[in-house]
Image (cartoon, rainbow, N blue to C red; front, top):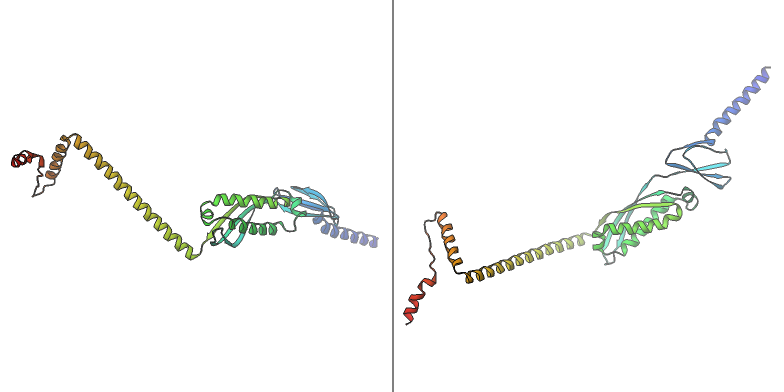
Length: 256
């Protein structure tokens, strides 16, 4: 009796140990943003999840995939622009897995593959752009990078949602040259504005002279206004300008 009881206890203990070993391999719980790609004896069965997943021990194998947006930093790249200016650029790529089966079966490591394809695309696209375009049309370049990387990673089940060029580092000599160019451009604009002001002032003076010549009384009114302004300044010495027309009659008599 005791031997039977001991044997039963041994079998129960063995089954319990076996259950503790196999249970974690049989039952999996996936979160809302996770999916499981199931292989049975090496053959792809499909994608399951989220929730409770039951597997056959030693037969089924599950690869867990995260469907959230992944951010990778593209390492700094030395790029020669189309106008032969060396620059150093880096970028950020945002993407997510939309087809877990392709991300597992079509590429060995989709994170590394996406990072490398982003580096090569960054060098290729920026090498075809000029420096002014790289600095002023950043949004256009970002869209171009996104379209190319998304097209190349689409067979892997990857969707690229955004690509942003973070920083463009210029050589010190180029920075000084651009600073001199900007300063010269500001001086040029200042001179043009000053010349335009002088031109407009001259136009107004010509118009004023035309009006005064058409209406001589305007000159007298201007004379009186000037006298009033001088008197308001409390000057000790006052100059009275006398129009030369007052002496016209005497000058004519002297000529006779």
